[in-house]
Image 1 (tube, rainbow, N blue to C red):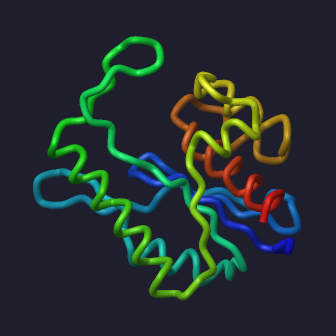
Image 2: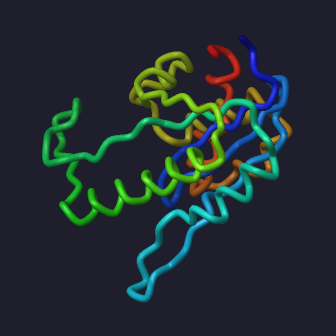
Length: 166
């Protein structure tokens, strides 16, 4: 079944939310965040819920992410995430997940390996993600032009994946 309004979510404080309508780019937003008294940022469940409610998607596609414990990556380099970072990352993902559940929106989760493989982005640098998203959706170019917009590009590509495969 093809869905007409698909939102893709790249979780995390540098993530983003992208909307496609009938496969056409409609917009992208940086993940709304709140900052606690210690200066730590986490996704804002309230602001995300308002955005999702206002844009009325009929499908949400959320990247199913995992923490990265101490382990070598495929390139042999160590990729690490400390215990506190893993906790904060999981907490942020939980906020996003709870916001979508409260609104009772149809949601699917896709691992990075699955959507990146379908896009030909396995082991690609983030700049390549932005280039692909801009090539597919030229009207999004101004919102994907900076290096820090990699989360936006991923959200757009995750939404595209959802539109194409669900």
